[in-house]
Length: 335
Image 1: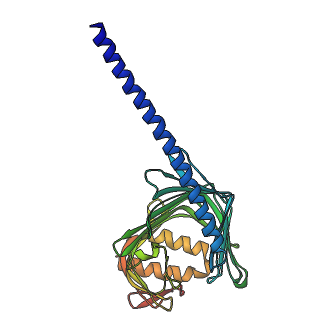
Image 2 (image 1 turned 180 degrees about the vertical axis):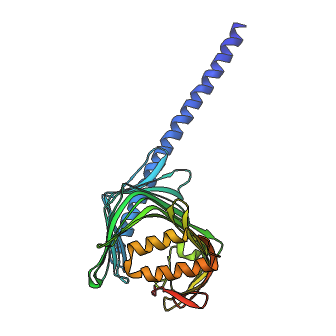
Image 3 (image 1 turned 45 degrees about the vertical axis):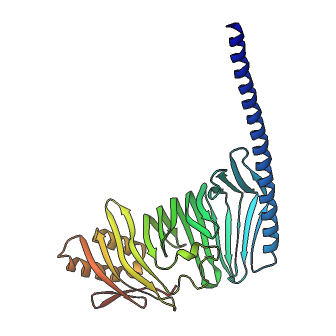
């Protein structure tokens, strides 16, 4: 009996030894594999970034490193820059941190620090900063399948000196989501407490939301990106564009829209207004020069709604001219 017990113990010991050896071998192979993959990734990124400097579309990542061992792998940069020479666009950002699970490398989470500066020749500039910006993306070899970005405490200023234009922008929170939907592209975005500083006047905060599907635009998320003429020549289904002043005072637009090759917008839209008088008064307060027009349009809408402070009306947009019934009420400049 004692001999049998010793034999059993010896068998268990051998199994434990083999298990321990297997764990050690696996850990060594995994560690070597991770650092080899990280080294290869860094080398390939360094080569790609260096090659981009010789082309029309370049990118930079100072202080490039690959981190995340043992269960993640991610790219880190002290600062990031892009330069698109054909469009005259350049941009610089602060530090970038990214991470993806080793078992799911196509799904990355990214944090980007400000401040950022975006410039477009000849003199358009957008300087912006934020408290926190996070993004996530799911990618395949041919490009992105879906992507999201969210930020808090956004503050910036948009300047075009040649047009004597300077607009400050601020929002407490914002989000944007992109997703391929067959051949189409789904887009949803929101801004909380968006306020605009026009220099001589500051627009009161309001919440903005938009939800639309752009036809034949899924390929915009491919490695080739959107065409240089985008969004010209595109069609979309606007499921909702809403402006919210609070206390139930909202404006919502929905319906099909099209942007012509000349940049002018056309479409047939349903307009829903909650609080017609409040919107009339707000527009008149912020833009005194448009007070008479606001009064006339509000009166027409209330007339169509039977005098109620809520209305649902049809808007017809033809080559940038907005019609309420047969009457033109606004102009949308070409994009």
